[in-house]
Amino acid sequence: MPQPVSLTVASPASAIVAAVCGPIFAILDCSTHKVLAAPEQFDAHKHTGPIRTACFSPDGTFFVTSGEDKTIKVWKQTAGPSSWTLSNERVAEKRMVEVCVSRDNATLVCADKHGDVWTFPLEPATPPSTKPGDGGSIIVGHVSMVTCAKLAAQDSLIVTGDRDEHVRVSRFPAGHIIEAFCLGHTQFVAHLTVIGDERLLASAGGDDFVALWDYRTGQLLARGDLRAYVEPSHGTIAVRALVHHGHHIAAVVEGTNAVIVFRWNPDTSTLDLARRVTTSANLGQVLSAAFDTTGRLWIGAMGGLGVVDLKASASATESVAVSFGDLQVAESDLYLFDTLRKDFEWEKDGGEVEDSGSKPKNPKQKKKVPLMYSFSFSQNRWFD
Image (cartoon, rainbow, N blue to C red; front, side, top):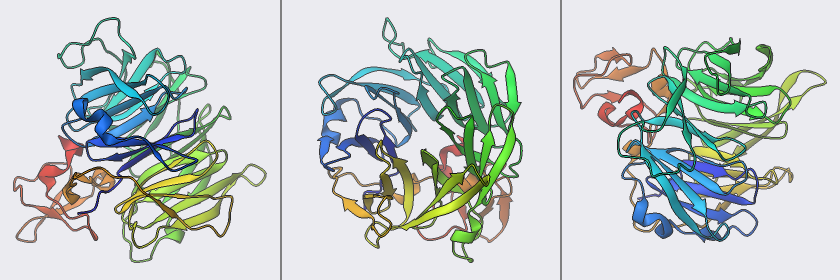
């Protein structure tokens, strides 16, 4: 059984990248492609369910993970990037969809699928209790399901996206004060990436485009057309990952073996295609992506981990060896972002269709999905 890399997370401060497979992860050196911290190092405190979101702190010394088990774990470097220990862990009320850390390493920001954004001390004075949400404060609330959150403007703002097509820009930590909305999506917003200190924000989800905004004003600056770079028979588009390096913005379209990379051209106010990166047959469908500090694109796929140097126009995706031991990840653990679509349809055993807004009563109901994406609704945790 393959060991899919469902998340790739690059440190913003050093040449290391984390590769997540199910409930475990490994830390690799971006330059040598060698494993610095093997999954076995984290075994004693690993998650009991698949990791769904993770991030490095801005200085790269902390790594935060959260998953299906509704726990949030903070890992800390103790003697360089090859040595990590569990600093603390806490229990969340709902499954987290995004975690991020403030620039001063003081505050952990967590967005949950219920519609709330929480703050916690990154390193509390006393260990958190097992009471869900203990020590946390809710700073932002959405009526709809929150799907993503990022800090912006040197941590003076927080940007959040939801299932109801909204992108909201609020003050941080006074999240009740709304500065702007970025409105223009017609489907769910699943991912946000803040581009440096340039007031630029990219967003993507269930639409067939990547949107670029001035998040201070909410002005739509440009759209990058995804439909033009996927197979005509692909069907609806859902973006699994959205990352950037400089003015390059990379989008992973669910159910494909490609990463679409756009380049923002401020002179023409356009998002132009820079590269369509296709994985090799042994890597297969793309699940995640991350840019390291040098601009190399790391790709998590069904068949493992790969990396490509976008500076070399003819370069191919290189497979990177990383083992997750005897771990076996079922295809059903690879949740679909497309299930956030409000008109998403689930097929009953008898062929009837039911809208995704309510849970099917029959646990054997299946979605009409491509390739490896067929699994029972009861295993899709977006609605748990």
